[in-house]
Length: 71
Image 1 (spheres, rainbow, N blue to C red):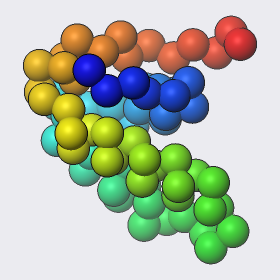
Image 2: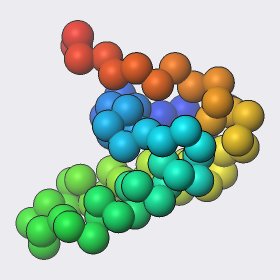
Image 3: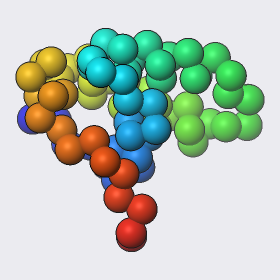
Image 4: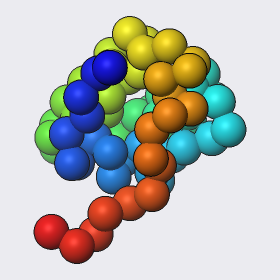
């Protein structure tokens, strides 16, 4: 299973949909609204999209998609 970073997991929690493909679509749409100086968020979303592409639907369904804001 692909390991997501803490920040990637939080981003996934914000944009999650019922399916892996739906979540990927939501992140792709969000990226269209990023400003040029939001490079860190662009890089993180690129990394997350790459990991989601490599993941199966079953692996996506097994993820605990609840944000962990206690760090």
